Image (cartoon, rainbow, N blue to C red; front, top):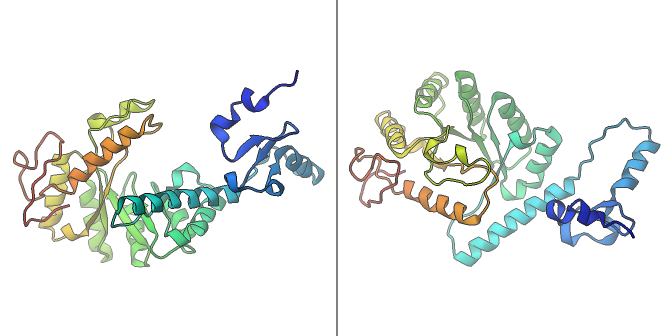
Amino acid sequence: MSTNYGYLYNIAGWGDPYFTVDSSGNVSVKIHGVETKPEQEIDLLAAVKKATEKNLQFPLILRFPDVLKHRLDSLNTAFANAIKYTGYTSHYQGVFPVKVNQNKHVVDDLVGFGKVYNFGLEAGSKPELLLAMNSLINGSPKAYLVCNGYKDMDYVSLALVARSINFNTIIVLELEEEVDTVVRASRELGVRPILGIRARLLTTNPGHFGSTSGKHGKFGLLEAQIYAVAEKLKQLGMLDCLKLLHFHIGSQIPTTSIISSAVREATGYHEIDVLLPPGEDGGTDGHPRHRRGPRDRL
């Protein structure tokens, strides 16, 4: 009795639609997903044998750039269809977090394949920022270069230099004290920044990393802190620099309902009246309040 290795290793569970077991029992790669033609499938065992014939050293990393392209196309098509279906009046523009895979070939491929979508990069350290800048030279000029993570003076200065040479750079504030670092660097370099704020949402994720979500998370600002940052920027004449709201709800999210809850909560921050003192409509418990009026808003 033959063994069903596809079932044994649950390939459909983690590899669909790109990895499967062919009729010979070998792992096969469908580089274009379900649109892959039979002659385009790649037999991994055959690829390894070819590498052996060429005396290549093992272990080897086999890369499939077409899979990256297909994922990018699928992602952007899904958003385009949803935008059309819902009548959404804005657009989708994604970024790839460099920390996920810092291999330069991978990052370059994503920037190249994503150029038509204005696809950008997210960097969380100085080395990642340098890699992102190097890759985005060949990307869309509209692509975002989102800068988060620990921000010392060198990192912030590098991000501002990137902005001064026409990268679409956004510095995301995750701690209140980062405002002072950004303002100081901005004045020293004579570069006006574009800023974002990372909100620490109250929506929790019951998944594996749920303990780092919600108001007890390590990163991001609660509502009162967002108010304080916005008020400080206003006093400095820099409130117009604040353009982006950024948030995470953790990894391994088990249901889409959590995403819906987080997005609903996050939209409330766009309605916060940043000129109201905490305790009025601004609130102090982290819950966004809604108030409409002729005042500055995030």
